[in-house]
Amino acid sequence: MSIAPYIKEIGRGKEGARSLTQAQAYDLMSQVLDGHVSDLEVGAFCIAMRIKGETTVELAGFLEAAQERCLPITNSLHPDGPVVLLPSYNGARKLPNLTALLAMSLAQKGVSVLVHGVTQDAARVSTADVFDALGLPTALGIDDVDRAWSRSEPVFIALDTLCPRLAKLLDVRRVIGLRNPGHTVAKLLDPTRGGAALRVVNHTHPEYADALGGFLQHTQANAMLMRGTEGEPVADARRLPRLDVFLRGTLQAALSLPAKEGVLTELPLLPRNIAAATTAVYIQSVLSGEAPAPLPITQQVDCLIQSLKAMRP
Image (tube, rainbow, N blue to C red; front, side, top):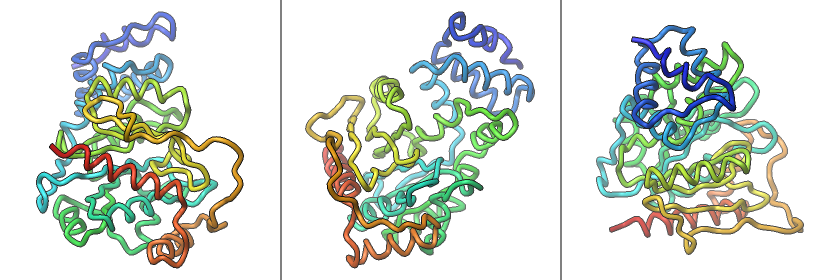
């Protein structure tokens, strides 16, 4: 098999490239993930899509193919219970990585939380690092997820475990030095496969907000769309970003929150050292009540809780 015909369509440059249908995008990504194409073709695909950019229907096709190859996650304790999905693929470089604080705050309120992402980044503090410092295990399979949820704990699962074929596509960046559609797909994964899940979908640049909003509408998703903190799915502890809630693909104005505008008059007390161990101590102090929780993260938690309630039939 070959994806050369698809590369011919998408590889004509930014102005001349043609977009694929959802079915074609699904077939292309299926062949890439299943290893049916050469390394040269994979590289050409990554570069061509980097130049052209993904359309909504292409992204939907790519995601469909990836999710079929994911480890299926089900909430065996509460089959109809909600699950919040937090994609963590960036880590912290300047600010403490507080994705684990968001996850644990939700878990304390009875929400099953699944964090998925990469385990290591030489230049950043990953959520996996913080989970480890907090003594929270990394799931190696479905049983580990069930055990964590039975203890009312959030659980982290590496993309290598959740979807090894997609993880291999992300690794192409190490060779060619460019991101590819796999990075966007990873942040959009829903391994519950249509279950009662609410995804936090974050972007790093404002221009991506409209594109991702269109995708959530097209796929009739349940999601919170926001600008992430250094690419992480947690509100900036200093200033609340805009939180747009989509239920079944429809923007819910009553559940969404506007961004905090104006000059910051007060900053939260955050650790100056962003190391995983220091971040873990800070998170524990917040959860125990010894330190005040950053208001934007508290607002994000409340927004997610209200959105989960609205999802119930």
